[in-house]
Amino acid sequence: MFKNAHPERDIEMADCYKNSIKLADDNKLKSIAFPSLGTGGHAYPIEVACPIAIKSTLEILAKTSYIEKVIFVCFSQSDYDYYEKMLNEIVG
Image (cartoon, rainbow, N blue to C red; front, side):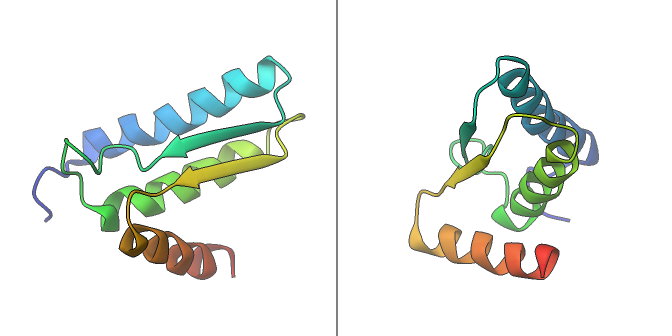
């Protein structure tokens, strides 16, 4: 178990991505950008937060009409590298 990571928070984090994307789509936006939620001051482990971000985003994107681009903004090169690795593992 990672410090600061809890299953109920995982659900809340996933809902944050889903609800934000749904709201953007409802307003006919074409793109949205997210920081790596929770991994800064809240010290949520990137190993937990990143897959949640990617999986929840992919899940809701399948139900949208207008969103064409989702940008994950990373604080560090190591966070970027982890996002890239996870994208390749999850998406293929």
